[in-house]
View 1 (tube, rainbow, N blue to C red):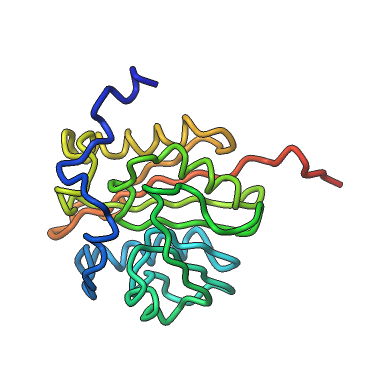
View 2: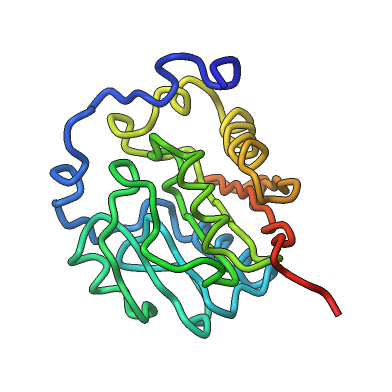
Length: 211
């Protein structure tokens, strides 16, 4: 693992308590409107319409239509409370405790929009996402080239868009339970924020039987 992620890869410029940083309400979007449309397009194409968990969420989840059930986790209670699509909301600091407060095989899909770059224990988070996903379920990570640089991991800041795609793909590849990841640049030629996506399906569970 040290070859893939050298010492300091997951360190950040600001290692102070994340709860203090995210205690400030930020009712803003972190990508431009066109990139947000690209997120919604992807969610529609992948048919994320069942039981969905949006991790590292905020006051808005970028679905065109609300899924059957939408659970959201994030760091700011006021922002989560304002998320009108959400059916349940839980404050979770995944860097402190990379465990989701849900049972095994609970969701058809998990999303993480423009936040994967802040995860300091991503392999543990990805493993727990695999745990809460049903067989064949999708974990969809979308990201751009914008971030809070003091809270993004150093490995992310040290590379470019292609490198970011490689980092997220490697998280999937190094996590047991996921099929091969798919990488896409969702809005090539866009004048504003680029939008990249990496996603993979939850592999068939060992306790799942077929007819």
